[in-house]
Amino acid sequence: MKILAKLWKFTKAPAYRRLDHAPNPLKLKIVLALLQWGIIIGVSVGIFNQWLIGLLKIDLGEHAIEKFLENYFLVPLFLMAVVFAPAVEEILFRGPLIWFKNKKYFKYCFYASVLLFAVVHMSNFELTGEVYYIAPLLVAPQLILGVFLGYVRVKLGLLWSICLHAMYNAVLITPILLYKFLNFPLE
Image 1 (spheres, rainbow, N blue to C red):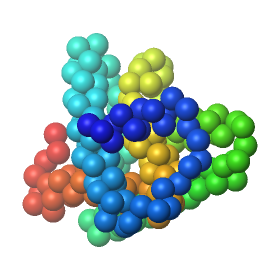
Image 2: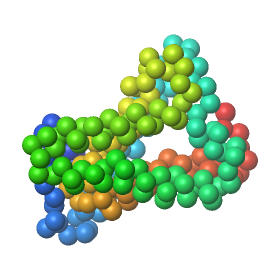
Image 3: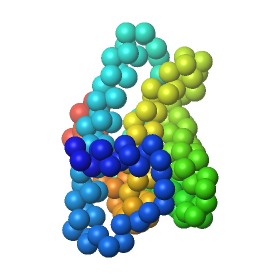
Image 4: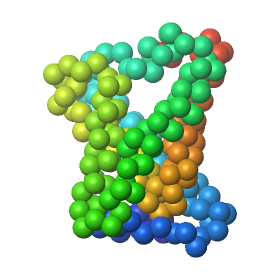
């Protein structure tokens, strides 16, 4: 819980202050704690979203992961989700934060990176009118993860945020890929 309090304090007033003095085992402990909380919060929000979408009878169409599962083999899918996407997204969305580290408007750049990260993930859904109405809920897990990743990027460095992102994706995609590998239907 202490890590969430630190994260909340940082989120209210982001500033570029690294924990360079922290040893790698402590950095790993921070990343693993945020991974745990990210999964708990992300899955909880996802479950709530599914309940609400069912209650409102909203058709989201086919999710991007379903298309990927149909068109790609398991190993390339895993590599795209766990290696390629985290590296590219972290470099694009959180890498540039260093350019603004000494600027008085750093916090706005931080918030923009979090928001852009969430908005880009709207491409996982078929963008219909109904989807736009609930868009903030649909990308809430990515919004929260964006804050976690931004915190790690600022405090620990870009490689640590890439690692957190990769582990988060691995935890979420591995069960889906196992289901596909074992030929279980996903519906």
